[in-house]
Image (cartoon, rainbow, N blue to C red; front, side, top):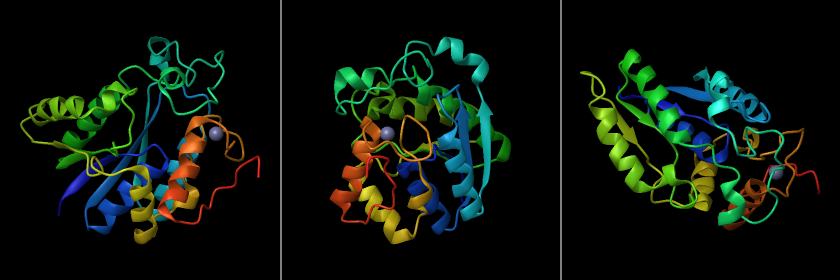
Length: 220
Ligand SMILES: [Zn+2]
């Protein structure tokens, strides 16, 4: 049986990825990371998603490294969360430097220790150029490194690389993924704010997919 460590943020894309690999009959475990986020809402979501799917979930506690991730609104709580469009200048304030490099490194270590075949993450075609470590060139180079990190070979997988977010939502609906348990909002709280860039992107993905949006938005 093929086996994978899946990077699970608690958002739509990684939840659909986890559901898809599990549905394919893989042995999967899920990993989240606590890098000092503004809120723990997405980790709560990831925990609920894994409980629903019957998947082991572990969080890598990287809070002690938060001092190295400064200058962005996700980990620096003195900065306001950007509310504009999903555009370049605004989104730059939401970048955790080299986040995927850090996450994939930890996930690779876990995959090697579990003798898993792969580390899978949900980078997709709609990921903006603003996230430098979402670029195909980054993933292709890192895959080569992951593969030679140990005598036990692990590969880096990005099954959604050719899909956009609406296609991922549609796939999730087809697979019965627990989309209603996912969390996207940068702000935390009890409901999605409906205003921040990820809320707007989330709402648009459901609309474009033609899938009923189960999200409760604060402003509705
Ligand atoms: Zn929001």
